[in-house]
Length: 274
Image (cartoon, rainbow, N blue to C red; front, side, top):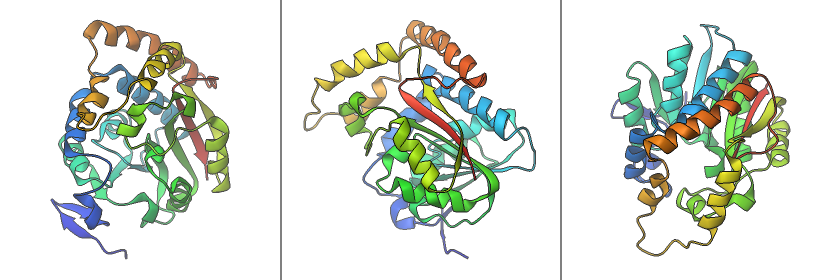
């Protein structure tokens, strides 16, 4: 059995990384936690993810589901309201898990490094939602996910799309890359998966997103800049704008639920089977 250390009642498989790491500050999780429930992007993404789980994993109450890089537990919270799956959340940052426990006190959360996952053929589904772009060894993580899934298990993934959309916001977020469809599908298939669905997300709003990113490309992150607050400032929209964007995102939700593979967008969303 893989050894772990208990910190704050959480099993920590990589305790040396639990409290200090190069990517996220404690403030980042606080800002996320306070924004996710209302921000159009998070609420719309959750609806798309839930729709795909409903299509591919059904409502099987015996299903064991792991989310790696679960952050503050927002996706798991959405799944818990819709399904009776046995849920587990994993995150490298202990601070994120503290917020996740507040959201879902009955869900088991563990701390681990996804490049060294301690599971074999254990889960019916694993989700990685805007996680792989943060990891240098993304293909190793995908292989570990393959090993951790049962035969016939499903992988659900979202990642940011297009390197030409790169701006200083990606630097602030410690992204290692943005993906294109060919790159993502090839990496998933090399691990042994069969692709069941792949398409874009943030399709209707993509022209507006593209123009905003062009503007961001001209801005430079200066020394001493409050990077975390700048990145998450985009999450706190006016109620009118946020409601308007939620309305437009309903088209994405409808088309993806119907199985349409949207040709372009700010993110990629993929489902694969072991």
